Length: 264
Image (cartoon, rainbow, N blue to C red; front, side, top):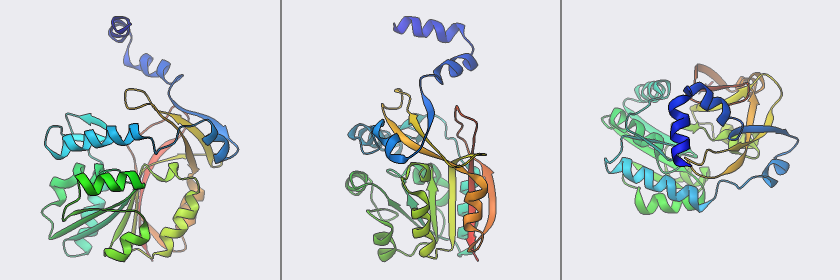
């Protein structure tokens, strides 16, 4: 079977391989509720996911790999320069100090990705808010003076002075995303930074994302947001400083975007 797969990869162009793969993996469906999508999913709290992410992040931390994204290791870093420039711009407004709340930041993927660019700032504190199993692992294996892990936004804000909250490829996996945004807006943080967030031209859509088993075996609910609705949600409280195209793409008609908002 492995020999057949290798032969197919050699014969068929990558475009056709991606096209046929999209029938089996990627985003499917248009569900009427999150519960209906969750009934056919496996969730995000799988021990398999944590184990894979932990192994990959340890490799990056220890210099055995250059870059990790969604538990996948790369021998070359793929930087999101709009995110990096946004963080450095925020630090410049704050006299070289950068305090980040990375909501859903796993075990520090974005921190390690950008570490060499931000480590020479006057001060860096990168705080990750995650699921309990990730926080426990983060505290045991990765936490240091610059990288911290917390169980909730409130716990983080009670212990740290935060300038910007970062949500990278996370809002779409929250059951009630606008309730989370209400919570974030209530903190009155000066900056909100989004990356790798999917949008459609229709109403908000609930799908199921089936992850390719080369990454890990999982299926979970995933939102695609209406862009105009999303942007209008912030317009009374925040100014849109910058928007940009993100790295991701999907097998349904959509676009992945990033946004930097500043409190009015």
